[in-house]
Length: 83
Ligand code: FES
Image 1: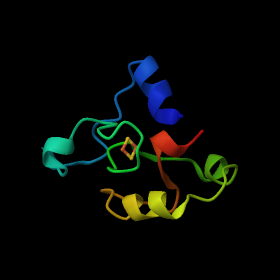
Image 2: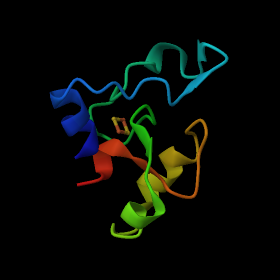
Image 3: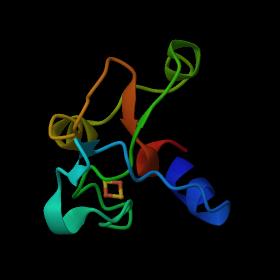
């Protein structure tokens, strides 16, 4: 998944949920905080429309978490769920 690949390559997903220099998720600021159990939105990524369209639709639990993601867009996904 995207979250694992980002970790393997030291790519920091942090910042997607920063607003005016403050983390919007308080102590859940660590990207991948729930380790892929769809219980946070710290792995939020925004895909290009072309890549988004290649993927199956998000499951309901992913959509529920995405609703809480800061800066949600039409092509947002949870990085831990994109295989
Ligand atoms: Fe928590 Fe992806 S790491 S939902």
